[in-house]
Image (cartoon, rainbow, N blue to C red; front, top):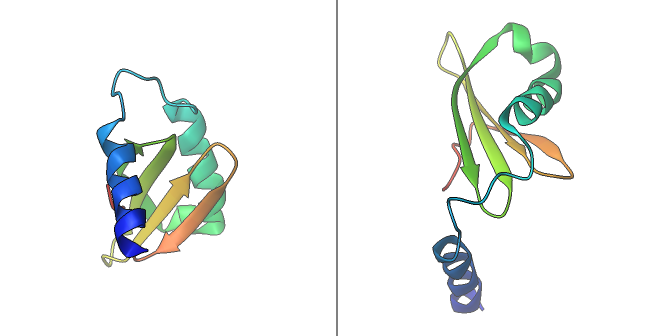
Length: 88
């Protein structure tokens, strides 16, 4: 089962065409990431944004004490994944 899942994940990354436009423009995705952070936007600043297949943005936010919050923004959802760097 693990082999099948990893093969599908690898094939998805391998077949990704970097010329394909993101499903959500960067400014809109950043706005949704800020909304997902909520009141933590006063403590954290964005240090990185990455686009991944099949249409997910990953934003890394750090506080001044080094705490990391990663926000995953896709077409239908936005969620904060505390302390987990994006895996691309």
